[in-house]
Length: 504
Ligand code: 0RQ
Image 1 (tube, rainbow, N blue to C red):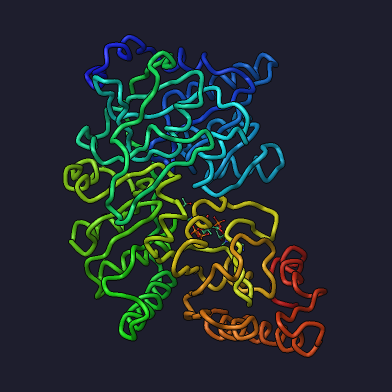
Image 2 (cartoon, rainbow, N blue to C red; image 1 turned 30 degrees about the horizontal axis):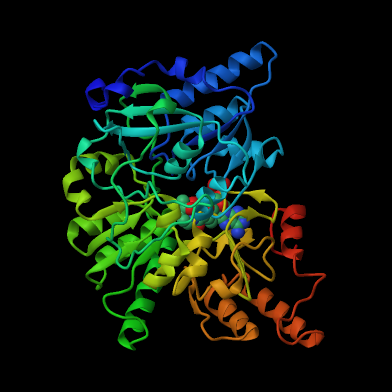
């Protein structure tokens, strides 16, 4: 590992993870790498969880305010949450243990657009960032830090923190140097800078993170892969969703409403998104490009097959097997992928300029096209809005998809009124379930409702939804977006009372 540190000043800072964790005190703000398990600090995270456990055993308080790129790993969010060591979490979480703490009301959670975290942190909206912990593949002789499989907000953390800890992880192929594109200077105090990105592969910065070496107090050596989660095998429902989408794209290119090759694609997290990418892999479209956030297995397969030419993203979010292939194929991938900080990968200015097609997954939608991506029954957080809002609002075409029912059919994903809103109907042009696709472009609210009910709702819930709409329409208070306010959230209420949205 030591031969990965080519800067003598930083080589002198090598220490073990426990010593590094000693630099972190109760109440501090921690700016960490991590966007999916990619780039999350590992050894220092585990040592920090141990430090919290030791403090609590002595009866001392110990909790940090944790800021990252997005979700992290079981070593960081999981270990710290299980040790009650996170008082505040910003901006995204995918870990089950931390989710439980947030939903129990024990950890405060600020769920916000991923592109806004760095500019808001630089503006001081989140208070002090005391310590930065970033993961590196290597450190150059000039002190430039070569990141691993994500960048997140690391340049902001390095600029803001008084104390910096670097984990140098020898697992990653050093040939990754050159894949990253980071703006390291000329950033206004409020985090704004020019982003003249006109093509997916355009570069505007340099390939390394920059830090004042005097702030680096610890460099810790590791050699371990990311703790990547498994994708489920692609199920029938996800395949059907992907099939409806492919048919839509084919039709739209035939009638000239979408150009060929297609505009840059964005694809969200999870199994449905991976199924859609797999369908593109087998589909008729060539010369694809992606301006996206997470780069999953399906997209990498298309780069290898030549279907996709270039990808801009924030992070690799790959299966364990794919992570091994990524390491082996690094020279090939470096020519085709630009990894960016999330305030650039997800920047609405760039997404709008490129005219992206955004494809994200939802928890539920209402008949009028409003989408809930984050809160089950309105109050229990699942993950967070992540980058879905950055892309949905700015995209040329924003698509939301999900299975039409959840929990074995006891929950309809299409409801009269969403119990929480992440994406307003104006940011949803197309909705897809395994039942079909609703094209909502140019439709009034009541037309949207009929399209969503007929094309997306599960047959077990379709008559109930249509009944709701017709009764709401005849109530005559408001003919634009008719609702029955005493019933609008009644389906959720019924589920909480009886365990199903179906009436008894
Ligand atoms: O619960 O874990 O108990 O089985 O929600 O649902 O079907 O596994 O789907 O993993 O694709 O996640 C919207 C959460 C979908 C995700 C969401 C329950 C379901 C299951 C997970 P279990 P699935 P996925 C840019 C894009 C926001 C961020 C985003 C997400 C669990 O896609 O977090 O888009 N999106 N980022 O049973 C009750 C319903 C439900 C429901 C699903 N209607 N009611 N429970 N579930 N629908 C990328 C990034 O930001 C990184």
